[in-house]
Image (cartoon, rainbow, N blue to C red; front, top):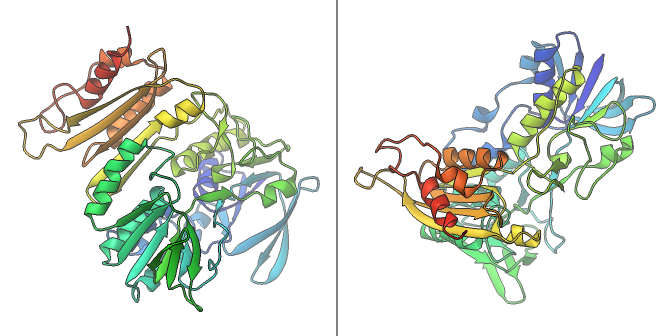
Length: 443
């Protein structure tokens, strides 16, 4: 059996590795348009900031490494056609068109950066961040730049804005919505993050989309609305990604609202064609409806499910909660499940409580403030949590992910046993304080 995987990102390369772990006989070929595989795009901002020394450090394996595992990785190959009836693909490599047969086809095409339609987006000095080559171009441009604008205040946008500031550029972070990280944080929590970014010297512009970029050949200024104009030696478009669906449509796969429709075995509507990663829709755990989960952790979990499916083993991909965590400077922030506003949009009447606690015992040196917000539905079932602190955020987000997955109520969690020692927690864990407080809002 021959498996052909299109896409060398987290979903594609992980699928190849997981198939090989389960079956030594399957023939595996990975085709990618990039010149590198097995690297973490999430690490690009940390290379730009200088925290990680080099882009080479975030490349974990080479095509030669996979060759040693009997996985054939073809880089700089652009797939141009898919025929599901004949089970063939066409691709261009070094200017020459090739054809390849397959028994099973995996689409791990990921997403393309979304660029809002506006004047000036094709000027020199305007960048999208999709891969390492994009990161290298930004790194080179930083050497001669004094000012930068990052538009789009999601995770990548915030991380890149901080990276540029750390390299001593004058940085503006802009977001067309009235808050940053709108998918994961409520405004009162995102305001904590905004205050920190401004304290670090980053100007944050909210509720004003960039309407035009100005320059002769190279970008020089950016317009916000009709009046505000800011200098910009470089502009980073961090306005999200859209699933890349051209090959899926060629293959005849059914497309949902945002991406390829797959079942819980990662099978598309076309026999022997599968899909993973940013190009697929997932099931939302709380509502059971379709959603998108463009996270590396989701892609890796999907790849494990798909590998078992292809190898004929029992497999099932569980619904998602979009658990996330990030770190900007000293500040960690994380979230899982629904925000208050998203719950309301989906006709859930949320019961919400925000508390302030400490990361360690009050008397222990260097205890840091921790802000926690818990969201429950009308029955007290936990449906969301947001946390901001200088330490120990990820482990508590993981705890709340498990709590939501298991359908726990705030009453259930408030009576659970947590470990304690003064250097790592308060005697009553901050999570317990939060759910105890929200419990008081119920009879």
